Length: 201
Image 1 (tube, helix red, strand yellow):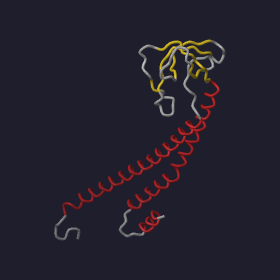
Image 2: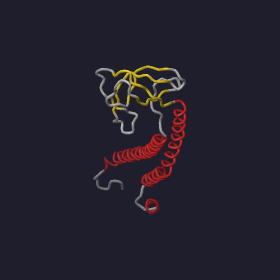
Image 3: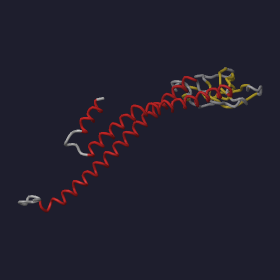
């Protein structure tokens, strides 16, 4: 409201130039776009991301299965590795050779990461596999998907606001350059007569 009131007073100011009025309208328009359009864009992007991610969650829950594997042997000299799929990303896992049974009943054998700090032969641990028993990443959970969607919406709103502000700055910069160019032209015309008695009379 203060900006609108200031704009109304500026319109009737005898010292204002046309470019001053245009700059004020550009600033007001940019403010309205940031306050009204940016949140809408953020909400739309967040909603689309939420729908897409939740659909991915449902698909992964249907196609991935948690099975129990048994350690056959540890891989000598294999260091513990951080598990990027855990919430903290700091849980350590050991690389082992293991046996497990796929959801379709077939026996599987291979190298996987075990959630065991000191694995021994015969130890059991859980792994995620696809329908054919191939090791797969842990399925995305609903809470994580929602968090990603919120971040996507927030980022879209910030990008929109930044784009509007950037456009406003470019417009004002070009207007200022034109103003300076006109001043230079006016000075070039007045320069030869500047300071002469009776100049302009």
